[in-house]
Length: 149
Image 1 (cartoon, rainbow, N blue to C red):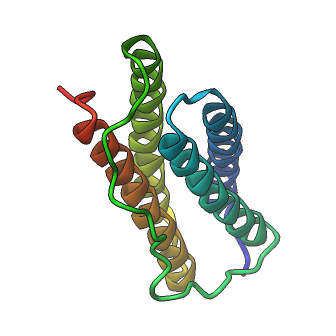
Image 2 (image 1 turned 60 degrees about the vertical axis):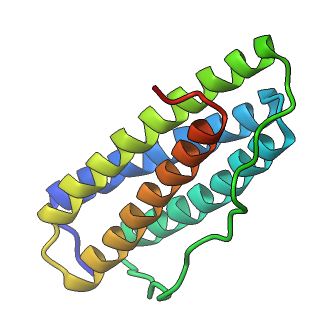
């Protein structure tokens, strides 16, 4: 696949965003009090690594075939047993992660519209859908734990 200058620029931006997501989720998994939240952040981090690999492949001219049912299996969130102070810290991590997912999903939305290759758009659309699912998982955890107003 031959990329236009604009497509290359957009993919480079999304690559930077994915790298930041990976770093943040690793940091947040280490900082979270609740083991369930630690696991959620680690699982999302792994998915973000897959996204980064896909974007890197696209920048090198290869569009990977995206599987149909790539939805991660995340257990239903349960109420945390952490104390109130630790829950406030976990709430901050969740709010930041949810904001990050909203921003990254919006970036993919723009990028999808700028691509001419259908297979590339399909791959980007697949990643965007997973980003939206990540936001849902974080939202669900926050809602169960009274963190979402």
